Length: 113
Length: 113
Image 1 (cartoon, rainbow over the protein chains, first blue to last red):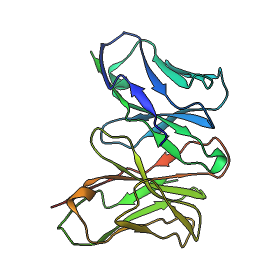
Image 2 (cartoon, chains in turn blue, cyan):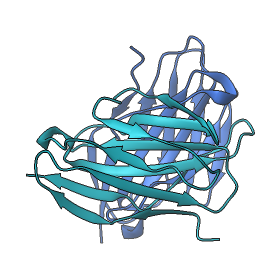
Image 3 (cartoon, rainbow over the protein chains, first blue to last red):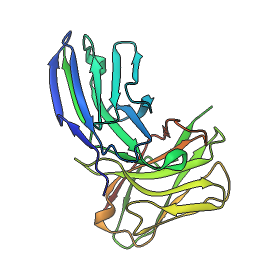
Image 4 (cartoon, chains in turn blue, green):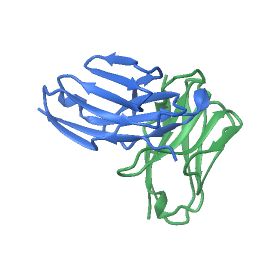
């Protein structure tokens, strides 16, 4: 059974702090890694889709890196703001273009003003 | 575009009742998915479809049925509801091209008593 692990499970930071969290996944037969942002009472929204080893993507203050050989991805948030408070999900795809996503349990981030 | 829409938003069922969760997307996406999300768990795939007339089981299909008669609609049917089916259900869709993120609906919160 393929397992995607995220750590930490939850994180509390002060406004202005930079933070990062980890997604670990089996590296064999890897195809793509997705990051989603999920605010309470809303639906998950895609942040990044990454496929290449060493890939790095950025959207505003949020960036992500990918290491497919060792099976991990980091998500970084620079200068956290209260509006960054959400659950961040990662999901891995092993089935190629028709493959389904296997989701981690998420990291819940709370940013205090 | 409305994106992915789901109805109802909330529902309470009695044990043994049946219901259909509706999902519609207006983005002409080939792929559609049904997930359930339980507290402390990642999103689990119930059923998916790669196009009209084609459906397949995901990780947790027992107790559910789906159909895909059109590209737009992907209803999820619960027969003989059980308390174990209390969950939040998300529908998602994506284009057939590779590396594309999934677009999620707002979710249906179902309670079976």
